[in-house]
View 1 (cartoon, rainbow, N blue to C red):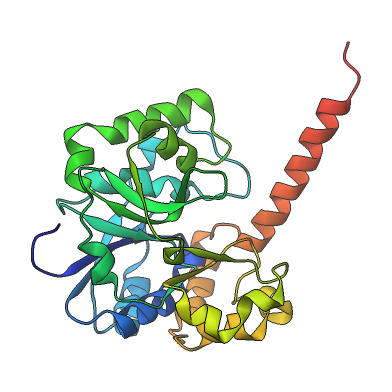
View 2: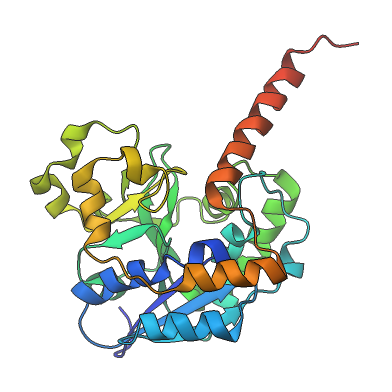
Length: 287
């Protein structure tokens, strides 16, 4: 169980992804009464972006935290991933919070998060939904940050990422370091939706009403090409909480000066090219 007080949540994103944070946060606010504190981990954003985020999320307390990228300089990273995908494993050392919930920004929460925040972890260092492969699904985590700090878990997670070059980045690190010590949650806390490929029957309103957290996985999101071809009922769950913050326009203006990271869809296409080249290398004659 946790101490009394606000529900504490951690999120992370680069400039391109943070513009969608207000929608994710609006969904949290809609179903979670009481005080909410959110740590926003970035690689550094301007005062202008911070002000827009605060204006867009007036009913929660935001704390901006700049990640130390030097800690991650030797980790393995596939081309389509942002280095901030590893932010999850550094978060317990970025705060003095005893516990927090980590959320990907492409998640729409539909249930009171205090229920999850106050869950009895029974001595487990974290809780998550089980991934289809049987491991951790790292898009939503309940983290016993105090336990991570005591056992110096962050050092072990980074070391694994450097030494083994895990294909699934920090998620593989978490699986390895916390093997057999993860509390698995009801799968409704992280239900995957692929806007372009899923069976439309899975989007029936009565089914979506049962879901505690909808996770729009893959590169096709409610804010890009996924909107053109995605299932209407699945998109409506995002649109219900959509916040037009102006962050995208501010981000675009600053990108001309600062240089922004590659947008997620282009990055995904780059990863396809990378995989194709790797396949060609494996098939090439040796010698």
